[in-house]
Length: 257
Length: 334
Image (cartoon, rainbow over the protein chains, first blue to last red):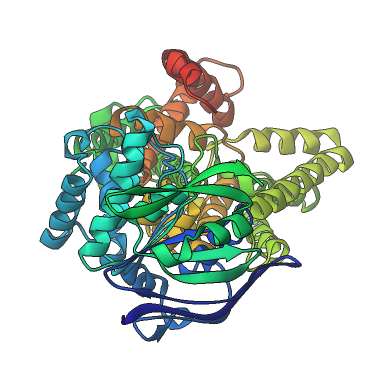
């Protein structure tokens, strides 16, 4: 496994609080990695540090280059970040939102190039929102908006995709749709890291799992080896039932411990 | 792709010269539009002096100041992702007003002296320096807004103190009238003093148009797309302060244009913050030109102040818009 993202001893302090403590991990192309852990484990903070949005100690490299040596635009071309909650402040058209994914590829006054148009069309098609392309994004449902937000991140065609709780507040169908899209992005060659609260969903779709607790990375590896009942009980404080679907073991939280 | 709103922008762009001609034609000398254009062209005789030296600076100031206010409003609403943002938010116009008032009250100059705009521009620049010093390099938007609010309140109090301590009631009245905002008796000197600042602010603000569109996704997503948030905030604060500060320095406080112009434009040009900028500036020019023509047509013993009229015209417009959108606003969460 050749890593595109390498994080070594990454620590983040917010005020006096040490939110992430010496986190070390790798992300490889072609892999969907689930970032799991209880609330307050530091998942979002670690993800924002990798995205270059907050200052962090330690070293983070992308394709061998130090994150802090990149300009914001260079960084944006190799790393797409999907924040929590599909926020749209103005009722822009869906295609205008998705075109924003091409922002790092253009300059101040450039109009979309043929490459940009192809990338936007591909992202609209992949997320099945092409039929909404000319509608204001604020007229869409929550599930449709989540797909628009994801399409925007996909349109960048960055080799690294970070998604913070992409399935939160989505219905059952859209949770599967979004996880499938993230898996497709990984299969197409991207290194995908997604914060996932639903362990069953993580077990079904993720190739690898990165588990955090109290600011530290406590486990990293292949999904089936990391999502063991004992570890889930220990870290999440729940007793899991282990089910099986198509040969894949799936943990289902049974009751709090 | 959703393109630039060409037609509404062109319509506004054609309305501006029409209103400028109207503005050049209105006045006690009673020149016809054709005479005005001829006099403007030749510059000869009393008509030439009236057209070139008296009316033209006023017309150009109305258009450029209106455009600056509209553009500043559109830029701030884009930066803050909030349709209620307006140019007075960071305190620069209040600082300019306080500095100009001080010069009128204690500088022994009349309200039309060149010392007034110079002091106003200096006041606006000092307020930007103060804002950046208070907020610091890594400041969040909330901190900048609070610092701006503090500066605006301080400048407001300073203006009140100046009125309070004015050497005599006539000077107090002159300051109060100047504060209402007017383009009466402004000369080409005013245009030359404020012009470079207005144009500089247009350039600085327009350069950030794309960043405003990216900010539709929120600050984290915009930053992840390569928007330098610190640089964008700094440029907008400076651009707004320089432009609106210079506008207030020559014309006094003209409220409402900066808030309303982008709103009016959004109705037919869409909500894309990058696409609202140019039509917003043109709409600002249209509003202020209209108001400035109106103050000269409305019969009154004392000429009405344009700052009063912008609010008088603007508020009914604004209310009509709110009423028509009320059902939609009621349906959506704040």
